[in-house]
Amino acid sequence: MAEDLHLTCQEIVELATEFLEGELPAEQATLFEEHINLCDGCEWYLDQMRTTIATVGHIEEEQLPPEMRSRLLATFRHWRRS
Amino acid sequence: MIAYKFLRADGSSVYSAFRWPLPKSSPGAWVDAPIDPCRSGIHACRPADLPYWAGRSLYEIELDGEIVEAPTKLVASRGRLLRAIAAWENQLRDAYTRICADRAHELALGVSPALEKWDAVIEPSIPEGPALLGFVAARIAEQRGGAAAYRAERARQSAWLAERLGV
Image (cartoon, helix red, strand yellow):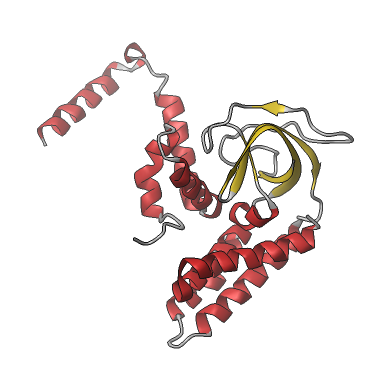
C-alpha cells in the first residue's frame, strides 16, 4: 500500500467537516494542515466553512424571517423526495 | 525545549486563529493548552519541519511541560514566544521560493522522459509563495523516486533554511 504523504484538494473538501469537528486521526489531520498551509484555495474554503458554522450555528428557528423559513422547508421537502 | 513557530503577519495562528502574546523587549506570556495533537496543545516545529509549515512570520518558541514528538511537528502543553526570527523576511522568503523553483525545474527536466506537465506548473506557482514551491519540488522528487525521494527533498530544504536562519 502506498504511503500517504499528502492530500489532494478534493480530499480536503471531503474531510473538512471531520477536521473541523476534531474527528480526523492525528496523522491525517497533520496532512490536512500541511495542505492548508500551502493551498490558498483550500484555506479560503476552510475559512468559509468556519464562518458559516459560526453564523448559522447561532440562528434559532424563531429568528428566521417567515419567507426564508418557508423557502428552507420547501427545499428540504424536495430534498427528502429526491 | 527550543522550537520554532510560524504565525500569520498579525501574530495569529494559521489553524486556530489564536492571537499569540508576542515578544517585545521580553518573551511573550506563557500559553497553556492540554495536549491532543492536531486538536489542542502548543504546536511548533523542529528545524527539520520548517519546510512543511513555512508561513509569513517565524518565531522562536520555548516549549515546556509535556512534549509530544510527531513526524513533522512537536506538540507541547505549554509555550511562549521568545523572539521573532528576523532573518525570515521578504528577501529570504523570495530566495527560498526561487531555489525551490529552480530545484523543481532541475528535477522535472533532468529525467527522461522529462516531466513536462510538472515543469509547466512551477513558474505560475511562484506568487503563491515558499510553502507551495517547497511542496512542488518535493512532489516532483516523489514522482521520480517515491516517498524516500520526497523526504530527501524536504530534508534538503530544511538544511537550506536552517543554515540561513541560524537555527
